[in-house]
Image (cartoon, rainbow, N blue to C red; front, side, top):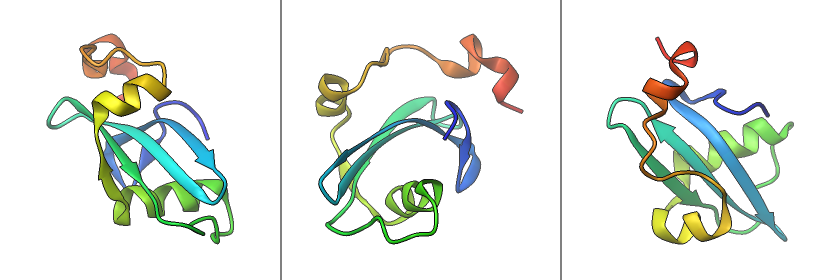
Length: 91
């Protein structure tokens, strides 16, 4: 899946995903609220046809995961507004 690809809605953009056994943590950027959000799945989420479908499922139905904890697992600048630095990806 490509960096900043839309997930579920055009304003939610994919940043990164980590898989831990059958559990996933997904980080996305919401261009409406201009904040990063993180979600964690339950076990055995990876039953979709593609990894993108699994990621969409985690974002839509996963539990909230603290962004400060996600910052320790992923590389992203929590203060960066992607709508300014990567404006070509946002409408």
